[in-house]
Length: 384
Image 1 (cartoon, rainbow, N blue to C red):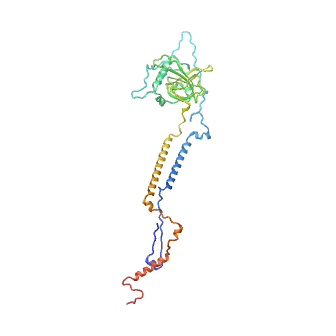
Image 2: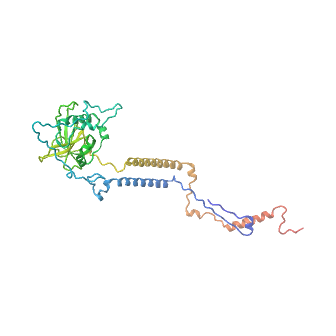
């Protein structure tokens, strides 16, 4: 819109005039179709950037550049299980006539029954280390004085829900550390993942805890090399392969109490030792259900939810703007604001006005008005 500054009467007499135009900038409308498309493109570009960030945050995305990670734990030095570990079994020395071997003293008597559930409904997964005082490392098999402690741990693990045990357990230390510091971890609840090599049933001995079923398993963890772990449990998951030599070596997770370094005869005819875990049941991961590595960012699901909320909100606003534009296009205001359809030929018929002629006529009209006023003598009248 323009403002015209018209000349005053004095300016007209002296032949001066001015015209002044003011251009007012109008605020752009963000409800137009063009601006809506721009906003949509902006949000879409933001979504593409978020997806690119999520894709780049995965470790597997960069394997083509760095290669797959090694099997060692992050932040820990790879330990060689064949180095600085004593796998030998302590052999019993012969007794002379009249000699006898005393058993280790039991500081605390083994309970007659197991009831780990507390009054508040929670479970006590701890084991008094004094109950395992008689357990001896690096001896062949399970000694009679160790049997009560063994079946006590089997009964305790079987009476606690598996999910409670898994939540309470810590990841097992490296294989070499467990073998070198066996007594330190005795009775500790730990979780180990590995490949199952052997799983067979055993006949349990008579015990006061009511253990009727028993299974023995051997598996290899990532850091144990060719040296296995051994475990005993009372339950098996449905459908898990069993046998003395499993070729497919299914993936398993063992959560149980560490008992001791167990002595056994190897296939080469030598006596060796392996860490022994006491579990209630084991967890089996079939080939089609092998757990994937967790995402490197715990906020992935929140970012995806935020992106979906933004997208839905934007789609709703665009839909509302489109409906409002259609309603406005059908209104009377829109029809009044429509500019006429004019071509260049139509402009030729418009009468043009010479601004100089218009100003001249205004000046003559001003002079005639001043002459016609009463009491104002004309230019030809005689003076009194």
